[in-house]
Structure formats: C-alpha cells, structure tokens
Picture 1 (tube, rainbow, N blue to C red):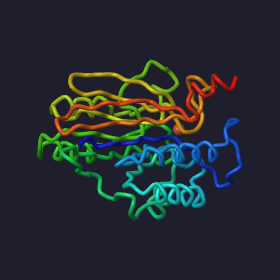
Picture 2 (picture 1 turned 180 degrees about the horizontal axis):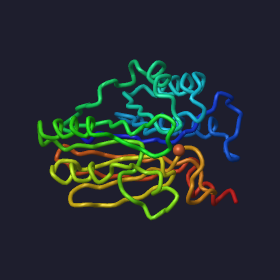
Picture 3 (picture 1 turned 90 degrees about the horizontal axis):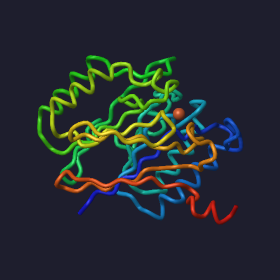
Length: 248
Ligand SMILES: [Fe+2]
C-alpha cells in the first residue's frame, strides 16, 4: 500500500490569530488547509519550515493543536523565520517525530536542518553532510529528503540569492547515491519541479502568501510513495481554484 504524505510549508503563523502579514491573515489560511487535510487523512505530515513568522509560543501551540487533531505522525523542521528551540519545546512530542530518520513501508524520510541563526539563507554544514553520507551509505532504500531551503536554483534571482548555500555539496552527495528519489523544500513560496538523474526536486506553494502569483490561495502538496520507489505528487489549493473561478 502506498504511503500518503501531505507537505505544507511556510505557514508564517502569528501570535495574534487575526493579524495579517502582507495582507494575508496567515492563521485563517492555515486553519483552512488543516481542514482540507483532515478530509484526506494522510499517513504522514511534513512541515517544511517558516511555520511561525514571529517565533511566538502561541503560534507553535496553535500549530501543535492542529497537528494533534489531524491525528497522523508529523515531521516539523525550522525555516529562517522560526525559533527552533521554541518549535522543539512545543512541537517536540508525539504526534511529532523527533528522529531525523523515519522509516515507513520501505521508504526512508530524512529531515535536514538548513536553519542558520539570524540569516535568511540556508546552510547544512560539513558535519550534517557527513552524517547524511553515512545514512545514505547504510542502505539503498528509496529515500525522501526534506529541508527548508531549496537545494536547486529556481531561476528567481531574489530567491536563488537566499537559497541553500552549500547546495553543490548536497547535490554531489545525492548524485553519489542512487536511492534519493525526492527532495522536498519550502522557502520559495511557489511550486516547482526539477529532475536530476533519478532524483526529483519539488518546491511547494506556501500556506501563507505566494511569491510568484499573489492572487493564489493557500497551497499544499500531496505525495503517494510506492514500495518499489515510484511516486506521484499533486499540488492542491485551498479553496480549490475551480471553486474560486465559480465565485468570481
Ligand atoms: Fe517563508
């Protein structure tokens, strides 16, 4: 049976649930997305950073409550806007998964930390890359990596300037092993797909405002992972775009 994964990213939650960020009431948008996720009942939720805008305990507590209500395991990583310590304290227990490597039905899900204090761009560092090298060398199980900063250039100058700074090292490592099928990221606030060999690099729309098309609603990505290493993925909008068109 395939593993059903939901990726949501860049919620940018604020302590005040009615406050707006660039005209976007981020708490309301996130609440709608969690409503849509409850109808899908995924096996695993991936939260790929910028979960809070202000790093407030209230924002993480709200997120924890939504995840608990969803009722599936969740992996939450920090983005450049997050406060990792606060995130870990509030979202550090079940249903959140603490381990960096999570094995489920023939796949390994590996969470990477590209957060740097007081910096917008990302960095993994040699210690973490060495650790990943060891994990990938252990077994050839189909593998999904998730990190906040895109490890590929996406032809958006402003975003490429604040992406993952040690992307060549990560890409070189992935290329040395054949089993990394998917690399998921956030940060870009837009969807993209790039393929290098047998590895697909997928960007996910934000739950909060989109950078490429501001008129788009909240987005999220679903993935179905098969035991043979194949996968399918789709972007979803909340509300659905067809619904938006009908309402105009
Ligand atoms: Fe963001």
